[in-house]
Image (cartoon, rainbow, N blue to C red; front, side, top):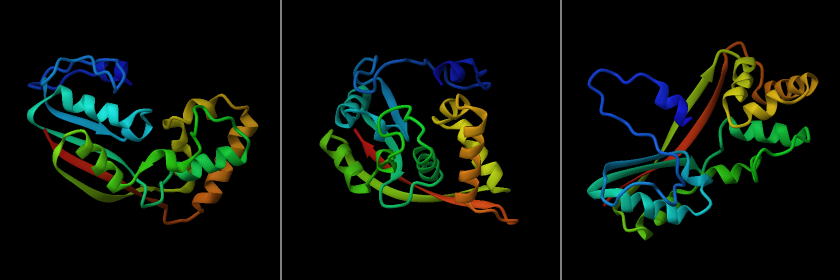
Length: 193
């Protein structure tokens, strides 16, 4: 992902971006370096969430704003839940621990706020935002599996099993002439250093 992002041409007048490969719990940057910190749908996957949020605070300048989002534990997971269920039902090996466990993808609003407050962020607010993802057909929605962390796993399966994954996803999503809509919900936290 970093290589793809770094390869994109910068827009005219855009600020320069330096891409760093480092653990979230050991950010390779000096203290008080950034005006803003953004962590979008990654925090829930970090082994040591508290250490990561502390690191984000360390590299933020006084007065900097942090915004962190996770899928909301209080709501269904959206398209990832039926994808994980389908792969588990078909006996596909998990590409990483708890890959098919919907709860490993989500954090509750209270847990997210507690993480930020315990790390010293102030004026912490969490908002749950719901958005709909819509496809023209269940077939199109099922095809999005290739653009997820499950994509390489599914692509490496024998053709017959790939088709079983696709067919089962289509069934779970439901065929409709009106398309398919899946609601997604995220908890978005904001804090100030």
